Image (cartoon, rainbow, N blue to C red; front, side, top):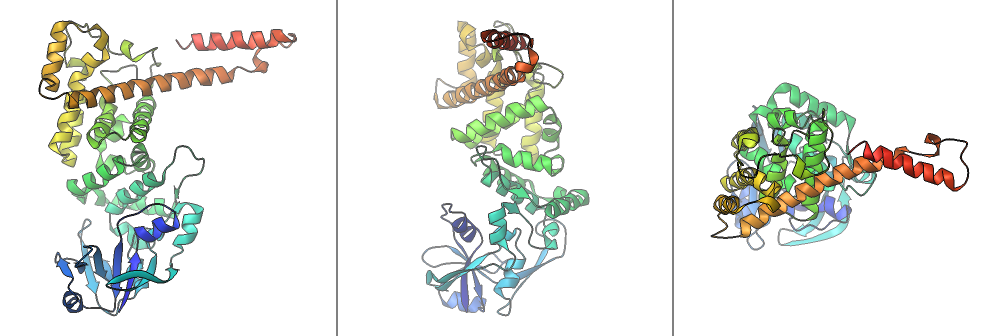
Length: 415
């Protein structure tokens, strides 16, 4: 019997990333031997056991063969004859298909620390490439979401070279898209991967990856359609990045993602319009006649996606509260007493001010993101004016003054 620590713990160790969860594979053992050692079997589909003390998962080495539609359509073969290399072959990515042998079932100390790496995962870590282990990758549609989540997990907006997906893996994802296999994923599994990805440091990277590989229309069709607007996508993605940096909770991050459906409430956020000077000017609803008319499509589309993915009720309700509050929060400084009373009723702030604080935090973050997008346009216009754009007959300080005047004029044209 040989015992190996496998998958994420090995990968994260090589990446110098912190990890807490450890998974193990046992080669050369039977279920009876595991039970005799005090392990607790979980489920009937897979030969997986819980350690009697640590409760960590120990799986018997196995192979898998596609036998039906969806992520459950597999026949599992577990036997003492299955090798560690054969077990690693069934995994999704090369960076997840590595193992380190440990002393035994009751001692997870590495024997030598040597990494068993039959599919070159260490090289792909070095090269920052997400690559499938085998052609069997295309047999499990859930792996499309998993690779997008891993892309997002390793994404860092502050570095130039992030992980990429290997071209041959993108081709396999294209086959999955064309096969309609993604439609056989359960809503629960899609939400599980999506919610985990949204809680990462760069939540938008997961959605961006699904867009880039052409899979988003198959799992979140209405979101894919609305994010075709560059300005809307920029606003949502920028806001999600800030949400990750500020450690907002899942409900807040989901509400920010649902901002993608706010085109009617914020018509200036379309590719045919220019960014306006500030967020206040987007929603011109009179402060005495605020209503949901301009937000109704936003609310409806958010509900459609929430129902499609079976988003937890509490998270969906938070989004609905934000959309309902949006006209009030946008004109917060001009609210009259009646408006404030309505806002308290909507948010139930008379019972607890916690949710109102979270809603206000989301709105301020959206305002900040909008202002950042606007300022980026100013910076671009500023940088576009160089010495080549001024009279070449000018000399000395006159050159600098002319450049400055040209830059001011370029910025003024955007306001």
